[in-house]
Length: 118
Image (cartoon, rainbow, N blue to C red; front, side, top):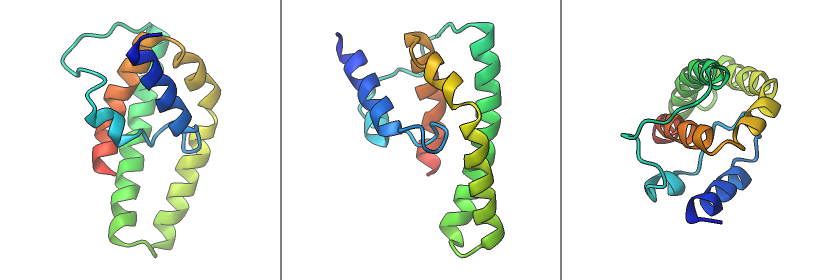
């Protein structure tokens, strides 16, 4: 098992799939386990999934920013719960896709944006 595989397994363990795989470990990203300037090929189904995920991620980033500024915002806190519940619907598919090394790298690169915002 190479170093990437060890880190990917650690990533998945930390991820826990509790918030739809949205909270990646910033220490993994700062450790430069992926290079964002490389081209990664994923299947059309995986690409469609990632388009959906990135749209969800944009919504999640927005509510997290509000939550940081106003933790008592009841409406925003409801939105966080709704987004988290929505993410549970595609957890099985994400878990299956993460078995593909190319997809896992693509996912971690995409998730870096959210990790930096959070």
